[in-house]
Amino acid sequence: MISIILAEDHQKMREALVSIIRSQKGYHISFEAENGYQLLLELAATKKLPNIALIDVQMPVMDGLAVTNYIHHHYPTIKILAVSGYSNHTIVHDIIEAGAVGYIIKDNFKQSLPKALLSLNNDCIFIDEMIEGFQLKKDIYHNSTLETIKTELPLLSKNEMVFLQLVATSITYEQIADLMNISNDTIYNYQRSLKNKLGLGCRHEFMIYALQNGYAKVAKLKTR
Image 1: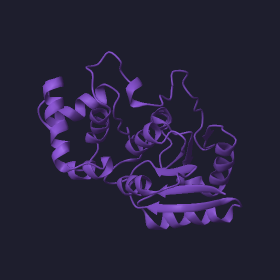
Image 2: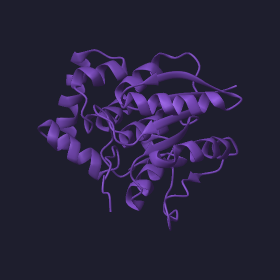
Image 3: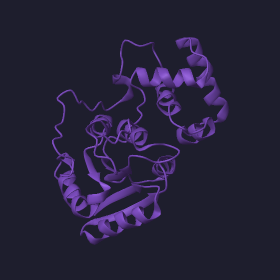
């Protein structure tokens, strides 16, 4: 039985996606979430990792690109299928580069979701047929660990890199601490340590550094 987790902030859309999945033989829903942060909390608490994560690209609290990037680096065995109302090639490229192996359009999910699940099970990338003319760029490369991002950067601990990955999202320091399973005091220790190592000050500067150096990603939500 192939297990699937799902993050979608619109309840009706979430219910529709779940209905399609349950109509397919051999699949079951492990858990659902209303946003990316909630999904990652559930994922951290689960004893058995799911096979597939179905992620909405645009969500509150923590957007789909950030969630995809996090899952890809910390749970690399999970295959990520992005679902979105956008067909812009830049968005599709960004989410695939972040670690997704499939992308479907909400207006076409009834037809594309079963095909996408089958494609992912066969270890193939799936791009919705509604996205006309899209071609995967040859420079897309899925790194499996944060440590491989920039070897020439200042030496950071694994937890400092995870902190940088999460600090560029909309979640609070307290929520970052929950995801990392550490105390709030430890989070502020990482903050002080990174200030000393990188010469940065406020959270905004941390976010810019994380994005510029590949630790974090944000979606470019353009409709054209």
